[in-house]
Length: 159
Image (cartoon, rainbow, N blue to C red; front, side, top):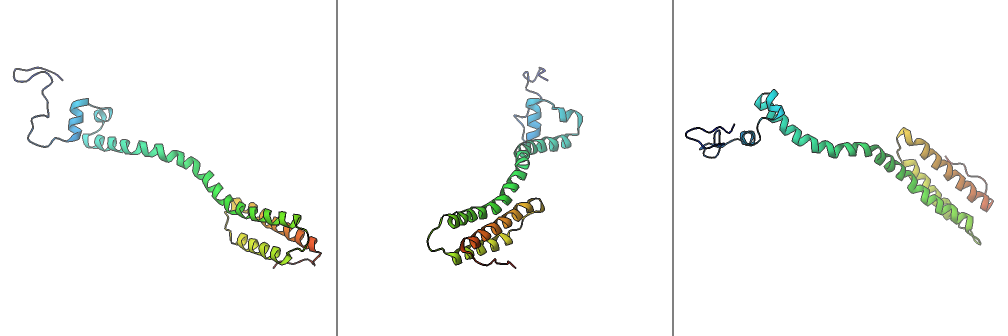
């Protein structure tokens, strides 16, 4: 490639330095680095497209593959956080019911419990997470029974 002739210096031909027309970047890269693996086995235009696709797709794959790995975990966390949010409020209410002495705010407790129960009923969970929502509803019933037992009220039937 670096042959010397009478009119050129070594490495001067084929050259792209003194050309009146605009030189393609692909041709310039071919001149500097030689033929790549793709250019040896594919037509020039196909090899150019394949090389550009590799340059774009490899970094994209490096970013997207870990995201696809963490997507199910992120989805699981998102669904569970909607359910567990109400567990926090229910636990606070249950502690208040167990620890309160003196005059008991039964109406407030039952109103808070009703608000939590309505909010939990509006939570839409995928079928795989339905057991967690049902368990939360059962725990709401347990707290309701604790409030009723604490105040010796007749049982309330939910409808």
